[in-house]
Length: 318
Image 1 (cartoon, rainbow, N blue to C red):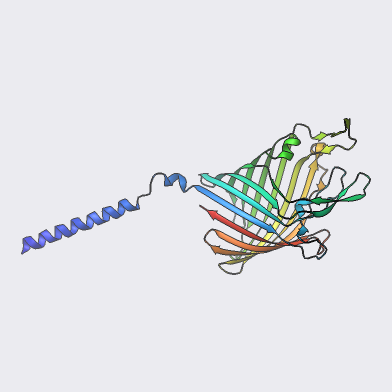
Image 2 (image 1 turned 90 degrees about the vertical axis):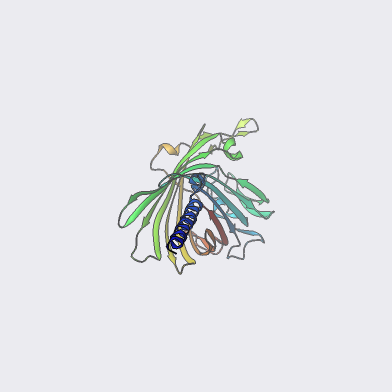
């Protein structure tokens, strides 16, 4: 009887070891996972919808990215089609706190025959039309560095980028490349639901020539093209988590630029695109999937006409 009991004990122990060993083997991480788990993919789309104003034709709205100054130094019309803005990013974690990524963005103007005004050299205006169109932006290689500096009251992170001159407009301008830095200061609060901070973007563009006189029928024009050599924006933000799934967001965006040889002067800056305020409501649909709605309004000339409402959708895969 003792021999039988001893035999059963040995068999049970051996069996338990085999099961444990099998489970251990099943839990071992494949070698390729050491590389693939460092990959990330992000896709976002923003729909720029109608304005709060009734002054727009059907399918038209306020679009701050159509603003700025033309070659005469006059403000451009912000009237444009409803639009989809797409953003794709493929990233790889090269080390702790360092992520290398490639980004590509493009926009779709989804309505045609949108009337807007253009300026003449004498300050008068004429009406033109925007057509349905898909256009892309210059592609970028980014290096994001988190935790550059950490303090009990704030932390600093930053993105650095190299921008390729890949669009037709950049090639026509004989742009060489662009360099940029996008720092973020995040402030700490005793209330974990509240997050505030300051984001900035500084981009230096390099051209074969900063200023060029276009050819007007074989004769150089008197008004030169002064290319954007520097872009600067500053955006304070404040967000509040209403619950685990809903976040109220708000931000201000201020924008300046330098054109042509102004880059040689540290005191000359122009108003670039319209400064705007934005308030948004963000919803966490599922892990890595977000949707939201927003309202954007011009600050300097606040009015219903300089407003647009829209929708956001983002998905992140790690």
